Figure 1 (cartoon, rainbow, N blue to C red):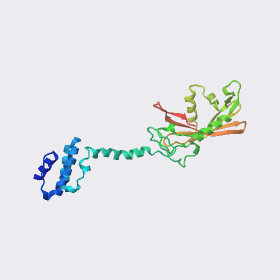
Figure 2: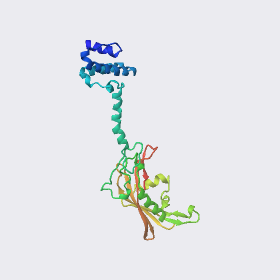
Figure 3: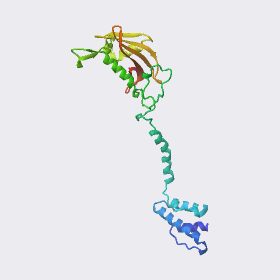
Figure 4: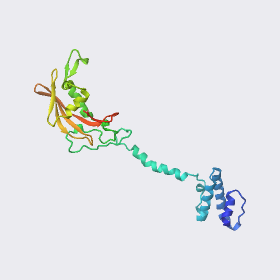
Length: 257
């Protein structure tokens, strides 16, 4: 108890005389007092006193200036950084070639062997995306565009001088909104069934190939054919999928390709 009282007097600025035979230990106490005083200036008197007393009882030689001058809360301040580092690393872990998306949580991965039409599997299936509408089908879209271009027929009273016979599907919808009713017409077809129309030059047919989902999203695939008489001019594989569109609360069938 006498030692503790002596040490506390030193830390609060009191005068202390040391025996010449304990000079080395006295030096340690003086150094500790100086460091504790520095901590006190920063408003940490209690922490400095407690830390110094603990060091003295555990072996004064282990006490260092950095220990005594450590600001209050330094230990706890380092904890959040240690916890957040893995989270930050995970946030940065975006596969090469992928875009960072808010709320991205959907990843498909490689095409299953059971999925027959490779061109209709998303090209960015390895990327985390926020929803089905963010999947990319660039090659399939290019094939669709080439099909439409092949079906163009020259006209005198249309914009650009050409009109695609591939757009003649409106003739199949007698009532209701085309954007709603045409998808319903196609998805109602059984595998192998077809619908079609005759344009200004070409005949277009759409045949149901079956239903193969994309992950957990229901999808149906179709073969589009363009013929001039009995000769095939072009074709491509298209797809409709059932999902909830942005700003909608109900899942509907939508043309993907």
